[in-house]
Picture 1: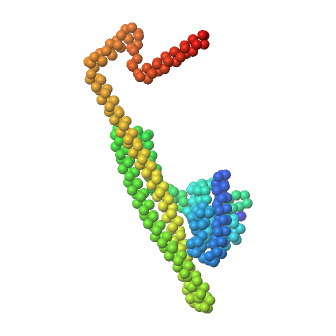
Picture 2: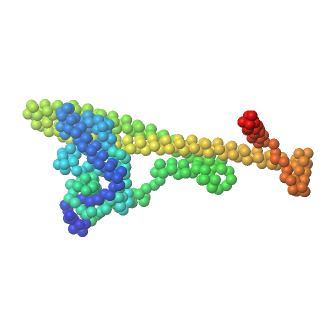
Picture 3: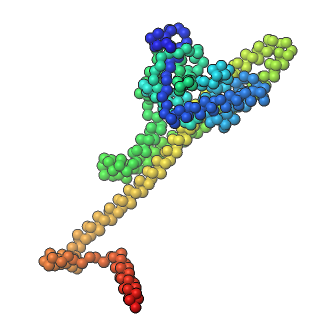
Length: 388
């Protein structure tokens, strides 16, 4: 194994991260490899049944949806896997392709990896360099005899992945989900109680206006993402249709010994495949944007409902406080009334005699006394019957 200081400067190299997953993350990684195996079986079945060979566009058209339904693999991994059949067999099923959506460095010793069971943050150790592969994909997940590794294609002595990831984390502005989280925290009871000033209804009203603006932004973002989804899918359908029409024409040109026409058709085929790759990546990214917009909108609507409840609670409490204050003021103003005089007289008698004033009437207390009396009567009756 090459050490970091011994790595060749010009040959393709890969930086090795030896993973230390917990039991849940390890199970998820193993499940992802099993799902990827199943994906390759589906691709072979589709290639045979539809006679599409290694045509990426037609494989995508016929196999993408079945793969997603049967394997639950992340969409990006499916897209990368369409081109990975030959290399995967050569590696005997011991490695998966990764890109910056599937694997992200989250710190000096943690990497986030997408699996069939969701994302997992996995600790890692640096393990030096390994042989590279020309960077057809940025990284690979490797299954070793004793665990898992992630290999990043790098230029030796230059580690842009970690630096760029950390710079992005440090410099990233507040995203929409973070803003929603801040708004939700702002309407918590403690936050309202600690707000400066005494007009808490005004504080909640301002929070509701901010949340309503966030809701409008979330709806606009979702609408834009849905419109983009329609455009991207429409273009992908056009490319798939053109590729399907082009394949028999190329075969016909070859059968007629028109190599010039066949070469032109193949060149067009390659151009369409390149467009398709870019389009597929854009579709995957747009799907993530749609999911984020939906999550944000749900959070915003929930926050708005909570804020409205906070405002209703505050309105009730402030109305009750105002009623209590008015009642107290009325009692103070009516201090010369007969009831007030009787109350003062009772207190004076209590101070003079040491006997406390009577307990005010309560229907609950009266009911309790009646219940106790009825039980006592029943008990005495039972005792009398037993004696007789």
